[in-house]
Length: 144
Ligand code: ZN
Image (cartoon, rainbow, N blue to C red; front, side, top):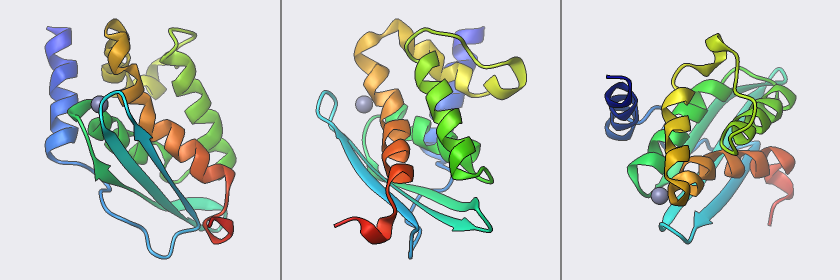
C-alpha cells in the first residue's frame, strides 16, 4: 500500500538520518524552532566552486521534522544556492497544496506531501526547508 511505503520512507530517514551533524566551518547557517511541536533544527552548509558541497542538519524533534531534514539535505547537495532556493520554493508550494514537482524530482518528497492530510504537522515537514531558506539568505560569517 502506498501510504505504508511513505510511512516507511519517513521512518527510514528518521532512524538512519542522512547528513546529520554540523558543517564546520560553515558558509551558511541558520536555526529554527517549531513551537507547535517542539522541533528544533540547525542547518549548516558549505560551498565549493559555487555549489553546496556539504550540508548537514542538527537538532531534535518528531519523526516528520527529522526525516524531512534528512531528505532535504540529499536533495540540496550539489546544487548552487540559487538552484537550492528555487527547489525549496517549489517544495513549500507543494506543502501548500499547489503545483507538485515533476515525476523524477518528486521521489521521496511524495512521502512528505502525505503530511498535507494532517495540517497540524505541515510545520514539522517544512521546518528544515524554511531553515535552509534562511541560511541561504545570509552568510554565516555575517550572522551574529
Ligand atoms: Zn514536529
